[in-house]
Figure: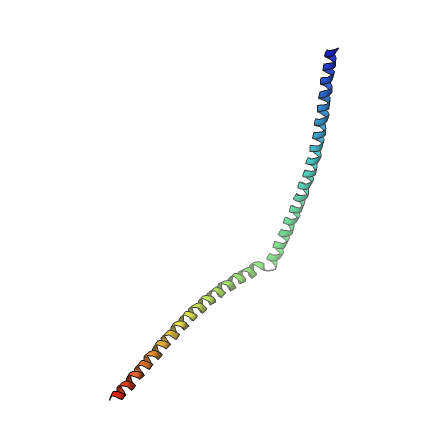
Length: 121
């Protein structure tokens, strides 16, 4: 009898363990279904976004966007060249101002030397 009671207790323990495992499995299944739904939703959104991007790219190609981008790149290159020319012009202008100042100093010194030699003579 005690052997049967021990066996019955063991069977009941297995039953309880099976019920707990069944509940855990059901919860895992529900969580997996929810996650799958989220993934499917994200996938649909991604596909819709990709289609939208493709339509926009096609519309931009038809409206001349590549030519516009080429003109922008050309304008940027010309602007850079103009900025380089202006920098070179400013540098040359600065050098010319220095040369004019030295020439003016030399003329003043020559004039002062002539005036001094005129006073001596």
